[in-house]
Image (cartoon, rainbow over all chains, first blue to last red; front, side):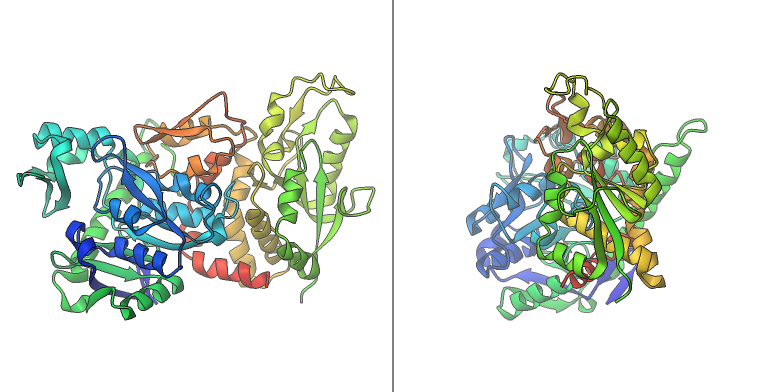
Length: 291
Length: 253
């Protein structure tokens, strides 16, 4: 077990890509989260999973309890607005009748799942029924209206025409269905970030069974942390079943160095925010959620 | 096996849902009663008439201040128990009993119900309506480790129980408003969805990615605030979730 102050505890870290052609076609990067959940569903490791599906408006995510490959695939790709995934956590075990629940989500949602398991306040049945969690790397999130502002006002694209959004190389990228590519420098998007993200002290979903994201791996591949015994078991089986191609993380560029750098940037910045909150008013502090 | 702790269930104005939750641990409860705790008081499950000395008292329900016996009973509980736990939301926050206006046959004058923390010092809250069997189980195991464990186990139990003890210090009102006042208004909400899952009456939906409480539905149980990852989040415990979950599962095998 490796324990890193910025990357959390993990058993191994690899660079990987799904071998499923259909999933790769629409994948944000290496199609890891989707492939893992589809594999877990088909193997009976989970009997359903909470994913960020399509909401009422374009690019507005909505949590969905997916119980088939098709439903999981519908939720593919990164949406930069938060989906209240955990709102279905208990209901998945009740109205949906699931005994083995999968959860995909960003860092704070992995934290939420672990808190619900260790301190199940009105979370009956949740502790024992969470069967697999796949956490995503996350720098910050945008409220839906912020996303609309960035895409429509700054990038001058209609949200309905967007095929893919991406944050990489210092820019917010908007790819449209007709092939147009617009970018907005992140300097201009920072102010639209969700304020609640600025006290988050996790970049790579330290509390997922497995966590994944693009940073650290070459284009079309994802960096994958295998963190828990359960995560390790599922990952090993999936790799043995040929679901993923993998490379040692040491052999790929830019590798863990970049990931650590970004993790440190986020966490140090947010620690500073927490510090500023302590002296926000005149002898008055804003609440510290970790105190 | 170290010596067992003395556990009691004190039943005030509650619906017995909390006790049912305790019992819903099934074989886990049998294991707790076999190895870790003797149930020395429980109106429903033990034939004991008067509140005895206890290590841990689980108090279900709020106190009707017009009912002399209830008032005496909670005071007696405080005197006789080392650790007083408010079991469930009525005991912690008043919950649904906050809405009482009296007028119930055959004691229509019984109209005012207070969470136990308004009458005595409470050490720990287990919020929930009903509290989940798993949280009751966790607290029971951790209370045992705190009182009878070795140094490491005592330290772990102390760390685990602290946020629930802090909730007891925080106050005796619970409401969706806590999410507004302490989380959303404080710029801490990230819209994860936890509060909606924890709400027993489905009063919470999402507006602009943030929780919106249906105020007429809220029963003042305080679950949403307790469950919120931005009310408390103790990394020193959460980072060990795998080991702690295994420890609890192991203790109940």
